[in-house]
Length: 52
Image 1 (cartoon, one colour):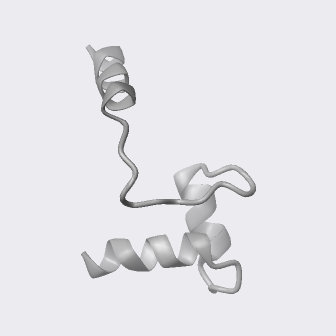
Image 2: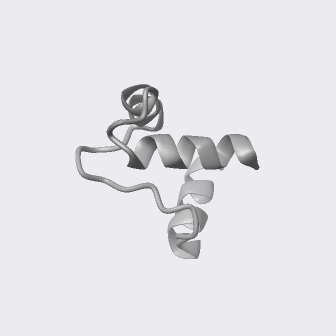
Image 3: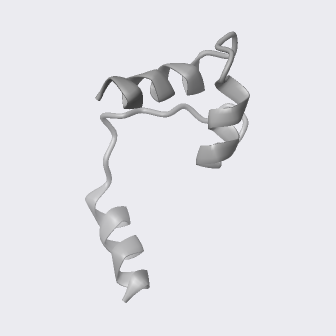
């Protein structure tokens, strides 16, 4: 879990040395914040349905 929290911190902190790399890797738009507690069941179900 510590690894994931490091990514969350890096993505949300522009002064973090890995900020740009992780934002690109996750495909985040400018100004978009990574909230590890946010989860949209409907969106997840739609994404999964697209796989099948």
